Length: 543
Image 1: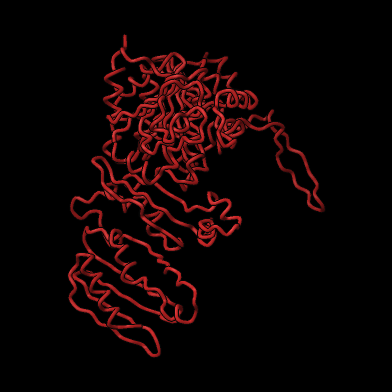
Image 2: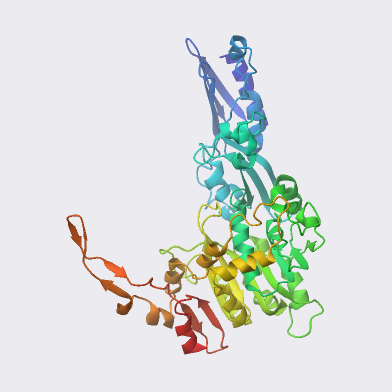
């Protein structure tokens, strides 16, 4: 309620924000409250206080490229003042003030000078999904730094729609409450952003990385040598090291600074302490793992770029956990667009080798074909994989990765034998998981998300994948021959419920999702969006 203190705090904030103050005016209200407005060069700052409620509202608007998020600690230091009256009326310790904040980009940027939206992390998912949202009870930047290759942001926050700040605070106590006894269930969410693009989160870590790694690992009959492209958080490496068949894992990551940040701020992602087969607390230190800080593009081409003999022993599984193929990021462009690199992936795999890559946000029924929409790089990569010799490719989706939208993965099989293993029954998958995975020291399940029913859901592509595939400029033959409902699969009959009589269509058996198996006469390879139900029909026709 002090006009003088508020003015001084405002002046200190202006100085810290590196803007020019032209004038300001403050007004004290009766009985309580102060409002201040400052005119800043092409900008403004306004402050309003409600002392009886213990609330200060601040709005700082600036023009220019100077970021404002770094001054959050200054704002908290200047304006998050404990309530002195509360301390006088009670003998209890004054609670630390809570700061709720949001950051929004306003005005016009594109079309002015060399501005490119995809080069500004604040104009990506980081800004839209996290910074601009004001409802979070807690939102703390753990790190926001520029490496030699990309901008890295790691945030910790509590969304009141799914978690309680009070429960989190109780989990930090030793009061014997349920929260204090199960603290892992009440931790804040953590998110990693690269170039402003959401990569992974604490509560979606298991779903995302287990979906990326284990389907391809259990499809291969005996994966001993595995390569990971990207995966700087260490979570993909962690999941691979859970398999007792693995003798060697090579992680090829271009950004060493990112790995060090993740070790410090996201240690849970690379924690191998509970894996019986691991000999290190950090997965990066496991004797089976080697981390190479190189460009994966050059690493694979140098070793497997030319057809013929290779000094490097071939790999059983290659897992590509880099940025999405359709994001405008320079360091990943060649990973998806260069056919020589794609061919080196094929050459680097053993006879029954499997390659898997995350594709980013899943298609919807409203999306155009990959070739004509914003996913042209994905389409180019898939075409290159087919031309390289992969006999089958399947797209599967996972919707529990806390990435705001379902996520897509592409798995490629070097021959039809490894592809056939993709369609193991749930019982066979359970046996494989039990046989291959190391047990944990704590006795907890080795996997938090992936299991046989989950794998079964991956075996057939989604309806959206079917629809977008059939929207190609030249309609694939499978779409004409198999799309639709065959009359012998359905039966219409009347049904009576109470006084209502209606005639719905009942399916005698589930209509299979469209099986897409395009036989290319040029090279004899088959690109499949496979349905296990009609796989035999297509097999009889083409194989």
